[in-house]
Image (cartoon, rainbow, N blue to C red; front, top):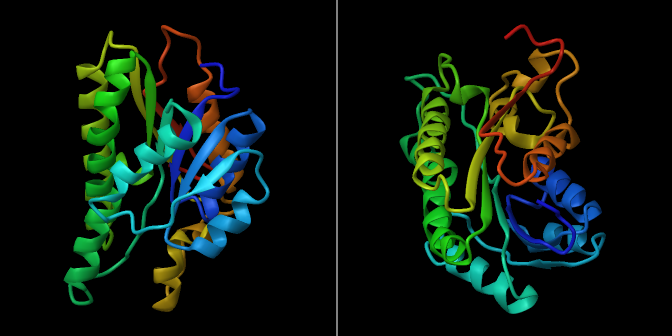
Length: 240
């Protein structure tokens, strides 16, 4: 895809990987619809970009996907890509488990992707083009103790994305996942609040958000007829 003047929705855009993706795609000349909970952070980011509008909101709000699509069409006239990046990560033993927090994580990490995907895909199919990139994780490829629910959400993202890829083959619409290892972001804040090490602290020289952003752009910029359905990226020091 030639990215100049294309339009993308980026979720979880206020910080970390989402903000890095927005900045990278802005450099490529894309117009952006940015969403996250913090209006202040979104506004600060949008002020640094060339053509970006913000839609603050909860990613779990069932009305948000329709609002995002309508905003893209009203502000820019079309939509070409969606980067489903919003996510949370809780590490809890069986004894520590906060069921409501874990179930909310399922809604944020998986249900929101399902809702957004099924809202934009009919539009993409009708126009004969479009791209969805779903942010997965190394946890979508393996499992670990105490983060089984998080692992489950990412395994679900992998299965859902691959099924869509096969269903959409030949339609002009593509879907893919990016699978990062440890990234230095605020994703592990809930671990650290419990006095535990964040995964980014366990791995020497973790990835930076900008590393993941380059992977997203790489997938989008592949020529017509080519798709990279999965891109697994880890720190060179990580023995996984």
